[in-house]
Image 1 (cartoon, rainbow, N blue to C red):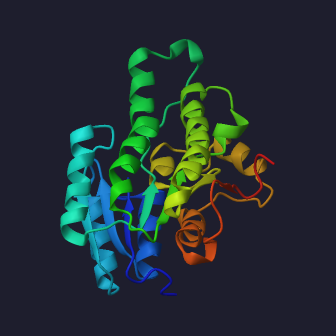
Image 2 (image 1 turned 180 degrees about the vertical axis):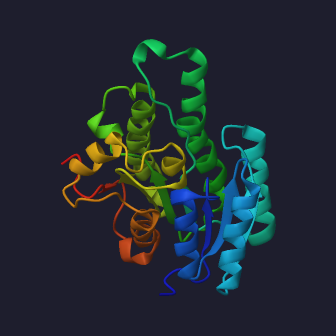
Length: 250
């Protein structure tokens, strides 16, 4: 406990799901957390209130990470309030699935603008706020970026791009002692997955059947490794894609 006291963490897409769990766990370790959201202010406010109720410090800041001006405003707020960034979690993303014949230019732009360009915009904006002591950037990717399942050409391509970006940024930012790693989850039981009707479906049965540990991940299963990568326990780890899949995709 208390591995992150005095650290300022920015978590994108943190109003629910994996991002919310990461925000809660970072705060539990003492970090001040900036809970970013795009549309779900109520969800972000609930996370902030939960952190505050447990004695932590957090603020909710809205920004669509695919829009340059909103990203700039997000980090202007962070700089004015806290003066620095020590931990950046690039979690915000959008999803798509379907046959490749149905891919449109608009769908391509929507996914790559958020999942890839948005991640780069956020990291560019955060970078000047890291101190000479450095810090940690954690990108959320997916095992689909490696296993490349059918009907996920666009989404898998964005996650494959994140894997590559993680490794290149790890090299570029290493001289500033900023570590860059990624977490690659498998099937995670989030609010979005539940809303899509996955629990109890044949698709879920298939996902669990290919997971040696025999269950879906919960958001906290991803949050706990994120805390590790954010902490000094991972001080000599950079450029890694940490698979958190219960063994799926081995």
